[in-house]
Length: 194
Image (cartoon, rainbow, N blue to C red; front, side, top):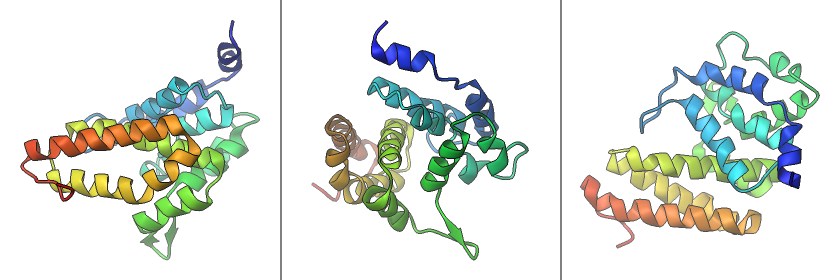
C-alpha cells in the first residue's frame, strides 16, 4: 500500500459526510446541490494526492455554515465534538466562510483576497479546489453575465495567487477559465477579453 493509501485509510470521513447531508436540499445555479459540490471539492483534493485529514474533512463541510447554518446539528459544538480533528476542521471551515458583520455580508472581493493573501495554507488549497469545482459546474450555467463575472473574479482574485500555492491547480484553473471563456459566445455573450 502506498503512502497516500495508508494516510487515507486512517481518516474517518463518515461523520463529516453526515453533517454535509444538510446541504442536499440547497441548490446550485448549474443544477445539482451543495452536498455534491462538497464531495466534488474533496475529490479534487484527493485527485491532487492531498491526504491532510483536517483539509479533507473541512472540504466535505466547507459551505455548511454559509448555506445550512440554521439546520439542526449545524453548530460549532457539533463539529468540534466529531473527533480529535473537529476543532481544527471547524476553524478551517470558519476561515473559509464569508463573514457577516452587523447583518452585512463580507464583499466577495474582500473575502477572496482575505483567503488568497492572508489565509492559512489549508484555506488557500481548499479555495483552489472549491474554485475548480465551481468552474467545472459553470459549464452547466446558462446565465452569460454570471459566467462572465465569475471568470473575471477568478482572473482577478484567484489566479494571481494560485501558482504560488500549487502549480498544478493553477494550470487546471487557467485551463478551466480559458475553456469557459471560449463557451461564452454560445451563451449569447461576447467576451470582454476578445
